Image (spheres, rainbow, N blue to C red):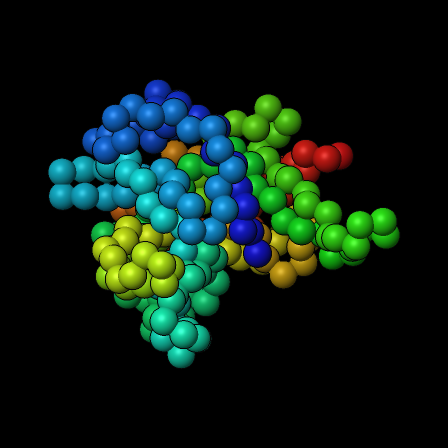
Length: 212
């Protein structure tokens, strides 16, 4: 599953892709690798319209899987039939997660280092903007013991079966990626029985491996 992605975009580029929104980041530009528990930009629905905000990567973990006091969070959501995830599948809890590339570890360790190689994927070599189909939530809890209980804004994104480009590297899953305005509008506004159709592999012609 994807546990590292990159976002390289300006506020103007985001507005070009999704239209106007309330900017809670004060026009910030983004150029960084995003790891689990890092803050990253998301576009979410609000009563006054779409807004761009920062959120921490990792939704609340199903309680039965939490060991100890801290909940490290779940970054990828696959089983949307789970009651745990269904509470965040409505329009109010959906978001778009902007990215320009994402990574997956290969299955075979390097013979020299013993580490699995990291492979990067993007729409094409120029790495234009795309969006993960995400969900978000406000949560009161302990992410790190050293921080104690706090209010958090959290997000994660859906995954699906991999397409023919990702499968040779990661045969179990790939992120749900949205590239067309119609898809983004559907994810943000459609009833779940319609929006759930977007949980599918991206067309293989719309993605490339950057190391090939």
